[in-house]
Image 1: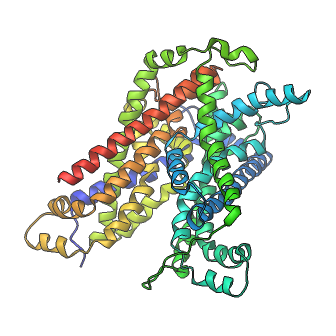
Image 2 (image 1 turned 120 degrees about the vertical axis):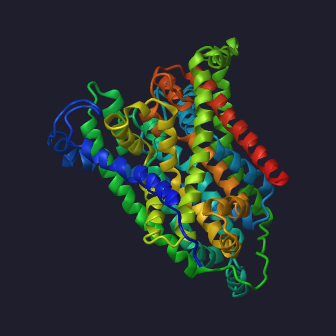
Image 3 (image 1 turned 60 degrees about the vertical axis):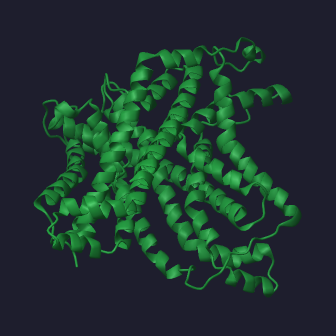
Amino acid sequence: MALKGSPILTIIALAISFLVIVPIGFLIFGMFWTTSPGLPGELTLEYAQEGFAIGEHATLLLNTGIFAGGSTILAIGIGVALALVLKRTDTPGRKFFDAVILVHFVFPSFLGDIAWTMLLSPRHGLLNYQLMRLFGLESAPFNIYTHEGMIWSQGIGLAALAYLLIHPAVANMDPVLEEAARISGASIKRSIGKVTLPILFPSILATALLLFMISLRSFETPTFIGQPGGIKVYMNAIYENIELVIPSRYGVASTQATVLLVLMLVVVVLYLQSTKRLSKYVSITGRGYKPRVIHLGRWKFATLAFAGGYIFLSTFMPFILLFFVSLVPFYATTRNMLENMTLANYTQVLLDELMISGAINSTLIAVSAAVVTTMAGAFLAYMAFRTRIRGKRVFEAIAILPMGYPGLVFGLALLWTFLTVFRPIFGTPWALVIAYMVIFLPLSMRSLSNTMMQVHTELEEAGATAGASWMKTMRLITLPLMKPAIINTFILILVYAYREVGTAVMLAGPGMYVVPVLILFWWRSGYLPVVAAATLIYGGLMVMTLLVARFLLTSRGKSA
């Protein structure tokens, strides 16, 4: 029996729905407006025609497809291999590798992009310089500013997420079919290819579509690596038309953003369809079993080398390189660069007023966004699964819709909205809090909906029968039962809000800087040692905030 709704609850859900849908209308409006957001102008088809130019879109679509598809294939290949190695074999150090991969996921995603440019830049890459000096080469053997370089950096970074999403399915597989294949004489390699991977295929497909979406909406790699190499995908083309061209071409950028949004929504539909089919491939039943660990013998040293190599390339190498660069007064590929090591870059960053205010802003905005988004997800989940309001599932669909909103695109949509209708909000922390709430709403809604469906309504119905309002019922019964899920959702959104760059670039204004925008500014100015120091400090700040939040939430949960 569903609980009766409330006008207050309906108003809150409608307000959230307004923030999800209306900005996209303003984005489409911007395609036909002659001036910048908020300025007087008139309707025109000029920018839409320019933005929809077949040649330009064909290039952007091809480059975006190559980048997103290549990154997804690389990430899935590494992620599946890591899951099989760390969850189904006796490879040494499995728990250590698993923990390091989780830590890697917490740090800002552009850490790897910056590190690879410092290593493989054709002009000042440290690895290129050493190889040229060692082998007497006249030109750099590697160039990070290519399609391959973008795919490498993005794929290596996304492989950690691929592993985190796939390894539960690998660890919980019923081994009976694999054992039958082995009894029939199949080798380990053949049983994995003919039995294990086909069983995992639905999970792999769903993860691949999710990674493809993440690559389509990626702002960092196209900006740090693609833009210097002249490789345009939708994200850096939109950024260029807004930030790097004088005068800014908001109409063309809005047209490109709308096309990317439509493409993203198509992929979202495919992803949702793939997740619905997962129930047809159930491999965890009521029958007890324990997945068999594969003993590799001497081959375990090869799998150890594979796992260790990935951890080094994705985590340790970027940290070591950035730490090394952060200690030099200037960045150069010379032998005597280490002779004048200094902490001046850290001092400059830590004493910089913009950095101090940016760190405070980043923390407050991330925490506020996590609180607001978790609450919004809880309200919409309650509307969809606990009330009798007609059309309530519409709110669930609206909450899923932002899965297709790239941060930069929705930031542009909110830019049009704020400067056209709600100008006082622009340039304030609330602009970013609202943007993050909408972008991460699907994550909050899905996480809390799954838990809410597992909690029976009988206690809530008893509270309603006793005369308690929906708010009191939710506060005293529903939320306490969902406390673990709420804590995990809050922490996950906190991490994502800290990592988001594209939205911050659009909506951060003078006096309201956040750390990712400052790092991007220093990088474009060529202050690489300062960029290295700021990135490490920012990553440390993320980890510290995460640990403090988790401690406070879990300790409060235990004392409650």
